[in-house]
Every structure is written in structure tokens, then in C-alpha cells.
Image 1 (cartoon, helix red, strand yellow):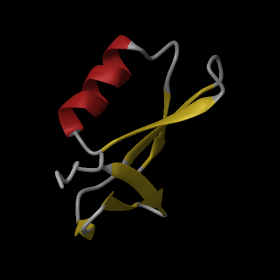
Image 2: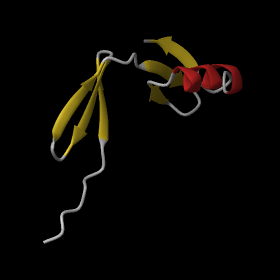
Image 3: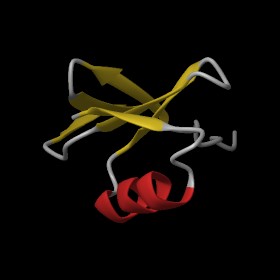
Image 4: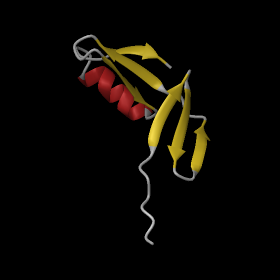
Length: 68
């Protein structure tokens, strides 16, 4: 029987990033940056500081930085 790898699911709980997999979960000490879009009516999360900076400079009309 061939085992198929389950995709990772990212869950954010009060600034803590948990990576859930079929084998269990791992914890990251990376900050989670949160953005809100009043246009799209949803949140966007990233742990990548470069991506955070890119979104702030490129998509400031769409995404508002809410904090870590």
C-alpha cells in the first residue's frame, strides 16, 4: 500500500504557528504577521518578514498590517 503524504495545514493561535501534518505537529517560534483586507473581507498571515515588507509596500491599498 502506497502512503500518500497529507498536505500541511497552517493554524494560527494567538501568535503561535502550528504546522499540522499526518504525523503530528511542530511548533515554530517565528512571529506571525497579520494583515486585514476591508476589500476582500479576510485576513492574510505570513511568517516571512520579506513577504510582510512586500505586502506593506506593494499592496497597502488592499492589506492593512494589524500586528504580530
